[in-house]
Length: 116
Image (cartoon, rainbow, N blue to C red; front, side, top):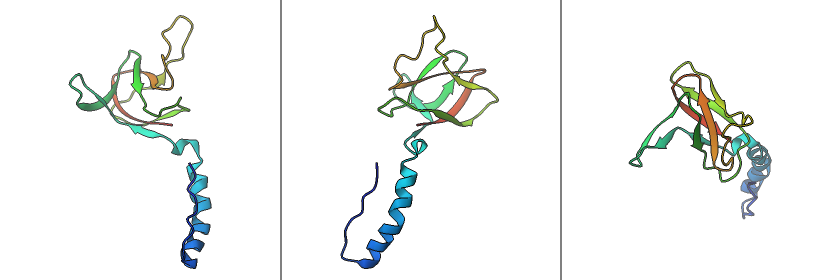
């Protein structure tokens, strides 16, 4: 979503916008900037708890409102490899990429993930 120029009565402010908006809009056009941080999930009582990935595949709701393009592990509390479901034939694949990441880890780990 591009930021548009607002016409003002100030020549100085118009010049600032003319110089600043192209750079800002270039940054906003980068796909990774259209993401969100996932750092918690809700427990059975709807209370936020740290996001935990275990050795079983887990659907993690990303709330982007669209299919995700990618994700990055931002922080973890253990030495574990976190990976996405490869959707191998016969496996239960991600039920809906517009809503979920389907992740698994080599060991139980608490994580923060940037999804875009």
